[in-house]
Image 1 (cartoon, rainbow, N blue to C red):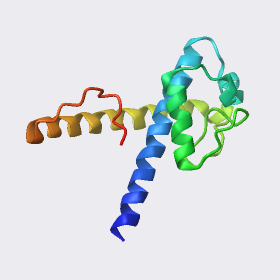
Image 2 (image 1 turned 135 degrees about the horizontal axis):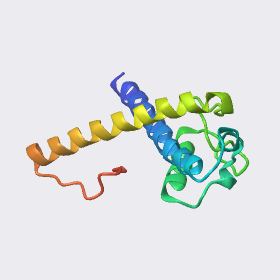
Image 3 (image 1 turned 90 degrees about the horizontal axis):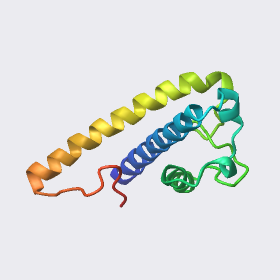
Length: 128
């Protein structure tokens, strides 16, 4: 049904958003001196108290994915943990996904502005 398709589409975009947010957290940790093995071993309790980390937790709750303090900090869209040997490949994929979401969001904001006169105050993310 149309409702099922819309639910599946929302789920897909929530998962993509989660991957994008996680990629920013991962980049921050790597820039701070963590190795891929360090990052892969991180648990939610190890994450900084930042807007990206808090949004990741909220997305995980919405998607029914593990979100307890001892859950892996970095997961695939399926909920499986990202392993150290996969981290570089996962991060490249996550960056592309994040870029795609940012571009699509920019197009949608432009269409809203032009066709409906709607301005989005926070282009980072619009929560419904």
